Length: 420
Image 1 (cartoon, helix red, strand yellow):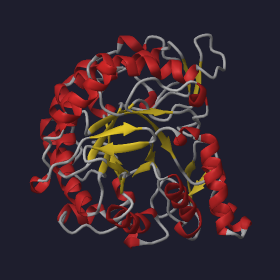
Image 2 (image 1 turned 30 degrees about the horizontal axis):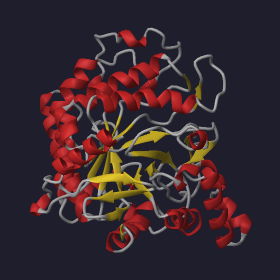
Image 3 (image 1 turned 45 degrees about the vertical axis):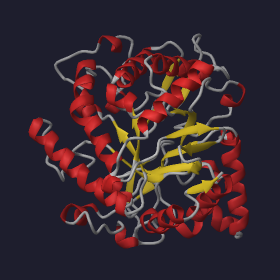
Image 4 (image 1 turned 30 degrees about the vertical axis):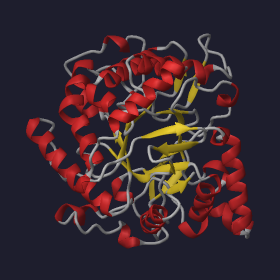
């Protein structure tokens, strides 16, 4: 333990030298109990957005090619976003190591041999090419992270793709994640900035069983602990954000079987309809204070590790329905979702949103990133003038854009940093 603490302190001391825009140092952060703490002794709570260097998700704003020229245009686009995010009071960025760069259609990943039939989309790892991940860590992902750091935004890297529906301790996907994080945590720059770059181990696991394919309270621990151990063996001592099951909404098993080691936090997702709350529930309650209390209680029931570790809500968004109603898609549970202003989840700030914020403020140690930049900023206007960002959806206060435009400013001024 003394050796581990010494390594963490050595890592953080090396990271103190990171200089942000305007020559201001960006202090390294670490986990201390249930808090993130910086080198100045402040308890820190972070707020920002996430994105992925994928032309489809970026609306073709840097073009549609994945060649060298496309990569340079992509980096230029992200530079504009990071400039705007800093001005708009963001201090954390979640970076997806998007498989559009790491996949190779002419290559079959040997580790995908046991992948079940029918796995598709970003859960399909058949064409993952480890060499491409190594290459694009150097050429794309690390340069993007460095741009974010220069604009005073801590970075959380998440692995390529999303989890398949059913996982088992020792399965092919666990081995895939081990290889991904082995590559990432060996990167010299990632290790150098260990107090500024964090790692989120997986995106939205649904079910995880033990090695015998049985339900087991130890399964979450046994799935992710070996991945943590690989990362630590490689010398990365920064923060590791560990997911839960149920699309990152269930963490009770970690109370009895926590991830072992230092600098551990838990990455959670929050959407309307989860944790027992949505606009309809608030309407039925007829008492907003009751709805807030019940949201807090349900979040605590599902994420009890909030009592012992920092929490990072790595995905959340909301906006009200458009009228007249028009079908959009089915959600994770197969339920119909109707078109809203342009977010994944449908809700209103004055109903669901204030309950969500009540949870943030009640626990105090919950950081967050909105699910996409277009949930926060008007990206078309940003491209033309990143120095004067404006909120998305016309700044509608009933959407996450207008709400977080106000919240992020308030948090940065007051509760973002709480003196110990």
